[in-house]
Length: 477
Image 1 (cartoon, helix red, strand yellow):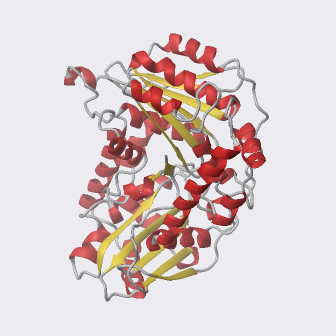
Image 2 (cartoon, one colour; image 1 turned 90 degrees about the horizontal axis):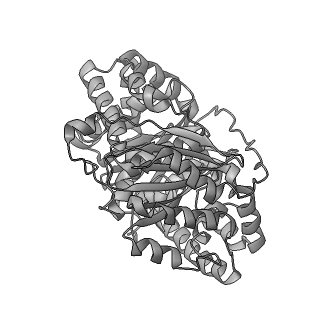
Image 3 (cartoon, rainbow, N blue to C red; image 1 turned 90 degrees about the vertical axis):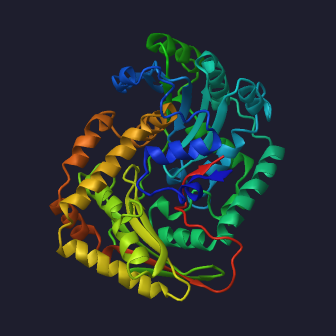
């Protein structure tokens, strides 16, 4: 299994939301990521605008499709509204574990048959688990779309879940878990999230805690499968050169006869407001000291998500960003300084940044530099030139993500899974453009305050096996 965020750490931070998915998948499959979409005529392609169509079947299954006649491929994605957000105490990691099991076979497609069939047609198949959802996808030539439908409709209902395969996958998942624990920066991020979220399920890493992974049983996995892997808890996303009415009919034939499941239990855990600074300190073998600072902020439902997105890019949008200029280039104290904010989450979000310091710099010094930058943002409006640059970065990343068939599917699937309305695509750019320097100053004053802050320090205590910096969420098979 690949960790999507470990790969992301090498990218410019402003390429988030859809672009992070597009670039990650491109690493696995250069065939799929074709920015030109194999368009024969650039002028003609510019006239194409995504027009998502939603269809709901009687059993609760939702289909969202976009007919893109310029794409050489079609992406078929199925998104289940289940991730670590939905897990119960002592059952953490079950969503990711079950994602592994979805590749272990059904009577029709025994273990390995899925990959063999997709590879035989030159396609790509993979999956990932996140806090809020689990998704599976096949990318093929349009003429092979029925194969993806056959595979996904079969394993939605007929997963074998044999004890031998469970034991095998448990060993693999535990090895992934131990690799995370050995990574000092990963461990720090995990601890910061656990400290920032005390009651909410985001307290737990998507991969789960090791004792829970060890004790998940066959009945645990089967009950979880029957609860969440049902048509009424799934959204199919198809993007490519498709005939809409014909696609609706074909999906109905493959999935429409599957029985509607019982509505999964709602997530009722709420994170109480934070009323004081929280700290976590880690001493582990590492190459460099690290300081991470995280703040509770609202998700996409709040209008402040737009200025927060621009603020995150101002701080960490590449080498021209405030953090890089102040901490790496001018009076350097760090070899890297970045951050992120992802408003597209079903639950509460975190706005965070981090720095990997120079060898003799201490984590408290890095925090002091961060605090100076925050104070300046609160007291002095950002320049119009810097604001315009950041907004252009955000908008270009958002639009470039939709240039890819797979990337557009990812955006639509993520939106559907967490409840983002489809008109988000149409209104996003205008709302980013409307952000002012006063908005930036206001959200900095509102959210970047000590009472809302969780700080993590990593003190090197020897030579590590490895080190990276990654948010402990999405995991890719």
